Length: 196
Image (cartoon, rainbow, N blue to C red; front, side, top):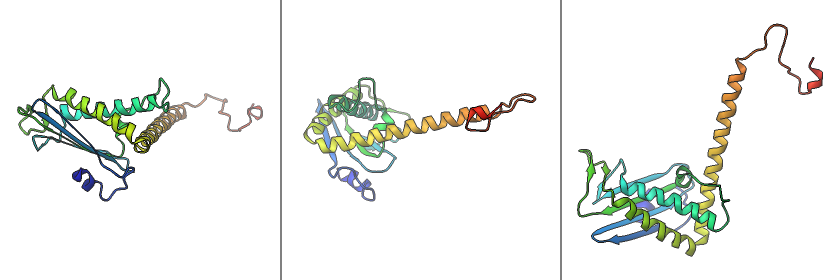
């Protein structure tokens, strides 16, 4: 929690408290701390047995999947999302600062630099903790949940608007190269009756 608070010290959080989730299964322990701020970037740092995994791995994948699932489920449960609407991972991670840490007896790292955790059993373990505990947190703290959900919806709207603008620009530039042959000319008047 302190690490996330320190990372967000020069940012404006959209909810005051850092959300802390933890769980244990056998000898495996997972700790997740997260807080949203008003920026457009996300920062997710993951660790396995206190070793930084800059390339992520199964623990980070489990966290990201669960986070997207929980926020979508929250939106559907409370009627903020229609049946076919869905927020994407990029939408729900905008403005997120999170630390995902797991402690395991046997860590299987991919590559010599230990940059990525490869234990396949860690993904469902982290996914389950985040899915259950974050949904409980949202139900107990509806104002925080709504603030996070609204931030995600704004990110979705911005993404869709940017996509439409790109498509419009591409269509326009494709049509610019096409001129009418000979005596024919494009109509430049706003009133089509004036063009002959």
